[in-house]
Amino acid sequence: MKDWFMTDPLRSTLLCVAVPATVIMILQTVMIFIGMAGHSDVDMPDDNGIDGVFGSDSPDAVDVHLGDSGLRIFTVRGIVAFFAVGGWAGLSALSLSGSPAAAIITAFVAGALALLLVAWFFKWAASLNENGTLQMENAVGKVGEVYITIPPEMGGTGKVNVIIQGRLTEAEAMTDSDRPLKYGEPGGVVGMAVGNVLKVRPIQKN
Image (cartoon, rainbow, N blue to C red; front, side, top):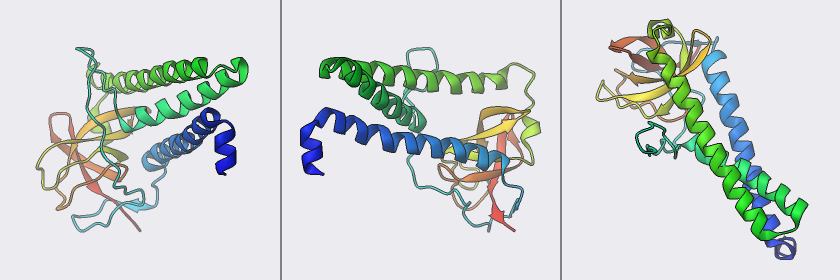
């Protein structure tokens, strides 16, 4: 293993970055759609519900904005996309050109573009809330995935990703549960808290 790494350290490093990041990105995508559309075997519990099957202690998104654009750049999914896309782009550039400098530049440029693309996608999804055609009340009864931890006992707002009217939507959410809902955990939308803020609770299997 050490000999393999020392033979071509740049290629080995890019491969070690790209493969795990790609696996995580695939799992994140699968979790979104399973967590939002595949929970036909779960109930909306009371405050004593157990953790969801996709519970996670992963950190929340780092809320860093790009100027006044409203883009949230450094999020968990964005960083994963940066390493996955950048890693494979760097490997491709290294194979085609044989130049380490070209590979590193290509990796950073491609990764940065992926980071921005993810930010733009979620900004676009969130903007659907504001166009009058998306009714947040239609989320009631659906299962979303917590994106930013939701404090317990209506103590503040977090965010969930939930499919509303066939659209993946990032929505603000609160919970009256006696425990926080953490990143990656499924939460059942049981009503509206205040304005367009969803009220969610942990879910449990039948």
